[in-house]
Image 1 (cartoon, one colour):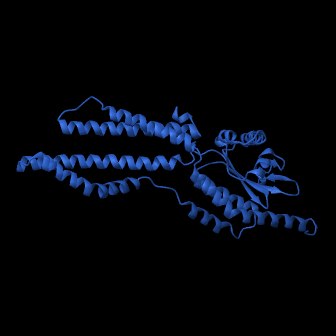
Image 2 (cartoon, rainbow, N blue to C red):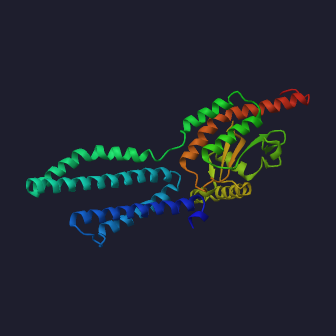
Image 3 (cartoon, rainbow, N blue to C red):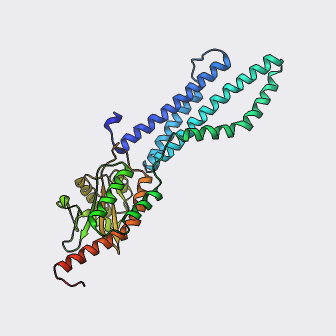
Length: 325
């Protein structure tokens, strides 16, 4: 069923699966430890590890519900790295400790109590640096994408001198597609003369959003990023029926646009643009990192887009022989 889900449902199933896999790894490690210590494989599973499995799963579900997947990817990613490195480190230490203990006791006939004391000292001194080495090694396997600051800086350098709306649309949409790994990105900009939002690409000019659209009304009151899968939570948190009604109407408009996320561009309390995003290619949910990227992008490109709209409208007035006001 994993491959049929999308967004939050897909990630929920994936993260719960990760939780159980880590619990299974712990159980396997305990079985190996028991076998090495006792000389035979103990098929009885310790109640502690059963409870550990349950608690880990409960923790994952709690984080999912509490943070609504907005930053769950980072939480679980770091947790997985730490858990794997810890298990690997313990496995190495268990093997070395047992090897050292058996060798010392057999070669020098030393009491096991003294070897245990020495082992405790070695673990106390050697475990932290060994754990850091293993953790760094595992962390290199998780290659992150380009930093938000760097991505937004590169975009700003590309658009800062541009005034052609179509060129700006192409540059912005292409970078968002590449950075967020999505296929569908559309930029809608306000045409004051017609009181409508149009797509800069003339081939897509039939896509129109009226200035009195309920989605625009929503963004006139709330200029935050609106994620379709978060709307149910927004409804739960709405202060009154009027707010709920506006959110529900905005949800209908988002569905018409087949959008997964919409971020508004606002200047002087006027919504002058919308960036409409579809789903991730892997049908993942949008995360807090995605939202931070889009918010920083908006901060950097808003002035450029607003100036480009004014420039285009001024040129249209000049061509029509209408003096600028």
